[in-house]
Image (cartoon, rainbow, N blue to C red; front, side, top):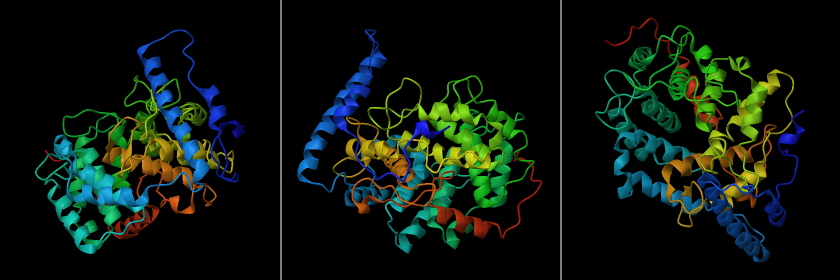
Length: 415
C-alpha cells in the first residue's frame, strides 16, 4: 500500500539524475502569480546549484560533503559571541542555547565541563519563581522557552543540570496555563495553539511531572486541529502547517493516543510536502521549500512509522525520499563559512542550522537501525529522538534520573 511514497534504506544512497529532474519543475500552466514566480525563481537558483555541483562531482567523487568543521567552528563562536542581528532575540536566549547545543550534539561534539556548568548557571537564571523558564534572566515564563531550557539541560545531562529544574513549580506553571478545553496557552494570558500542548507534554514527560489530570481533554483538543488536508493546524479551523502537524502528532504519541488521528490522511498530506525538484520540504501547500521543514516534516515520518507498526501495516523504510532530502541540504543549504540556511539566497542562522541538521539526521538513520548516508561516511550525524529532538541517549538518561523522583501531585495553579 505504501510502496509509492519513498525509497528504502536497502537502496544504495545515490544522487538523483539532475537532467531527469528538469521534468519535475513547476508548471504554472500560463497562470502567473506572485507565488508561482517565487517558486520558479527558487527552482532556477537550485537548478544552477545542481548543474555546478554535477561539474564538481566530475573532478571530486567524494561529494556531497558535510562541512562539519566549518559548522562546528561557527556554532562554537555563536555560543559565545552572537552577531549584532540577534539583538532582537533577547527573549529567545534559551532557544539559542538549545539550537546550538543540539546542533553540536548532532555533529558529535563534546563540550568541556566548565562550559556546561556556565550554561546551566545561565539557564538557571532564566527560571521563574512561578515555574517554567523565560527566554532570558528575569523574563516571564513561557512554554516555548521552557521547552528549549529543559531540552538544553537534558542535553547537558549532568546532575547540576537536572537539579536546577524546580519540578514542583514547573508543574504549577503547566497547571496555570492549561485551558478548560484541554489546550495550553503559551504564557499566562497568551495565545492558545498546538505548540503549547507539545511543549507542555515534552517538558512534563522528560521531567516526570506528567499526570493524567493535567492533560485531561488534551488529546481530544489536538484531534480537533487535524484539517481536511490531513495535517494539523495551530488551532481548530486553521490551515495545516508542518510545524503544527509535528507538534500535534508528537503530542498524541506522548499521550499514547496516536490511534485517534487519521494516519492515512496525515501521511498523504506529509508526503506531498516534499518538493519533487528541490528534494526538501515545504511547510504548507503551495509554499516554497525551507530547510527547517527537513525536520518539522521529515521528522514526522518516524512518528508515522511507529503508528503504522501498531497497525501491522508498516514498510521497512521511512516513507519519503531520504536521498533527495540529503541532496537538498548538502548541496543547497550549507554556508561555506559554516551554518545552514532556509534556501539558497537566504542568510545562515542558528535556527535553520539546528532543524536542517536534525532533518539530515532523520534522513540518514533508517528504521531498521542501518544507515543511509549520502556522500562520504564521515557525513554521518548523530541520531536524534524523533519526538523530543534531542539525542536518544539524553532522553534515556533524563528519564532514568527523573523516574526515581516522585511525581508532584494535586498542585493548584499559582494565583
